[in-house]
Image 1 (cartoon, rainbow, N blue to C red):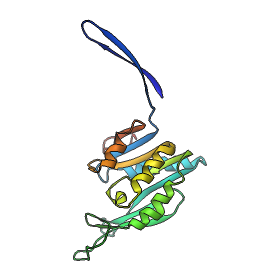
Image 2 (cartoon, one colour):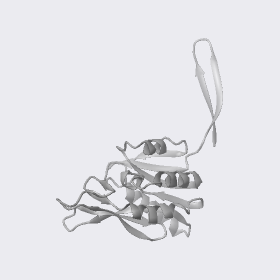
Image 3 (cartoon, rainbow, N blue to C red):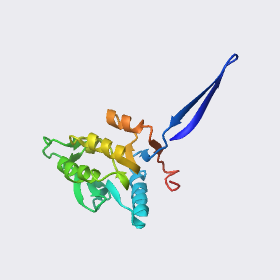
Image 4 (cartoon, rainbow, N blue to C red):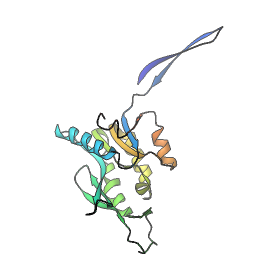
Length: 192
């Protein structure tokens, strides 16, 4: 925690109040899709583990088709395990499955078995990687609690959230006192 003094003055009084502000432990990146949030997370993870330090959590990786369009997303755990998170649904395909975000069918088993399991090792000196706290991941029952527990247990971490998220859990995470929220743009991404 950092000690701060707030001084307020009006015409007749001066009030000084000492208070403690927790130092940010988690760097949380937000921004539009495709702006580079995951690229920054992967660079942080690579730099951290290059020195032999351990990490916990997961990041996502796009699966691209030949025409350059997103075909889906893959979960990559810090320990190297992978699973298909979501795949683009074929036009006219069956639409009566549990997990769906836009045109993507979401594999909630992958979230539970790989992403949530990878969050269990958070804490200590491990870098927490949480990419992403988004609609797809939140479709899996218990993901919010697993993410919160990992954030609480971690001394240092990097996470991503969508810029236009409307889920109450995302708003609560963004408002945490131990989070430094940074918006990634095309103009600032190389500096981050």
